[in-house]
Length: 499
Image (cartoon, rainbow, N blue to C red; front, top):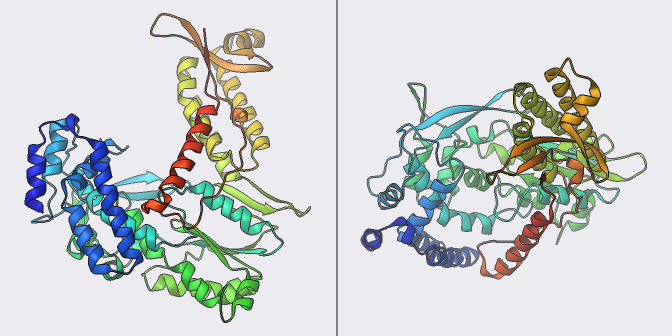
């Protein structure tokens, strides 16, 4: 099969001439067969299909396309290489082989976290990223088939809005009233290598090489004895596989069917997880503290993980809790409201203030070009919850930041002059921040600041829990959700420009 794949790759003269529709169809067909074999418990068949996929020309080409077209395609590893030219991409696909493969160490970098700390990332070389993407093609269908239905992070067809909508559905009734906010201490850094090698259904030799490749921090090599590095394409799926099964473990203690189902249903224990962030609902505080929390801790301990004592807490719904940038709370009038969290609003306004303060000498049109994607992205994320008043407050605070910016640029000018230079009336809205610019065809246009209040609040329809994007039975359902999202995006307001 390897020789046959090599012959096919050698026969391809140009990267641009590849028939990607045929490539994707071949890979999707093999993934559907993997799903079927996994469902039937035929693990020898699964292993054979994975071998067929990871040694096929279609799989290698698709893996290379993925790593050379994503956001990190221009970020090199320790070897400094990137595959940007068509010839380099084709040669890279030909180099993907398990025989003699040995990954290079990761390049360690740090990115800032919301709490002020830094998050370590391990950047593999482009060849190692392509190898991970290749083996991910055969692993992800299995992960989706075996995944917890209450898991929404790093999964095809699922997103944060689904997890938040599941929170709303879970809390619409008076019970459950208590929440265990779970935070796993260093989840990606502490997952047991031995557990992954024993339980992840893929080539163990390749997986062991990835887990023990180590990383370079500066010029110092550091060995890795646990964890899966954040930055690798396959790492989120490995983390999901490690955490999948928690829902089933809770069901064993609080069954919804069969013996003990009356007590299980009455306990109102439900898990909602997004990657390593999760909550568990319960009827009473004692139930969560004395029964649920020990079950979760025992489950994590088997995988080398533990809850963070500082961030794990049990909260009543009347007090509210933050989850995925939203605040979930039942107010004194009995109404459940989900709003953008204060931390999320504060981070947005802090970022807009930083951009505006850095742009003292920048033209207003260029400043708008920096602010609009940030405001639009934040508002789009929060458009499925109770956000209208928060959007209005955000628009007002950004207006105040821009007004101070304009006054600082022209300390000798009056307010009316500044208003005429930077703000205009558009339809029924006054004080619209704008910036003149000249288009490519020589027309004089106005770029206008995007307003969060222009985003329409739309209730999100939660994804079906049983969705498996690699199962042909779900193709039409997934396509329908994609069409609705595209239609909603097309109808969303954009930053305007007027001659």
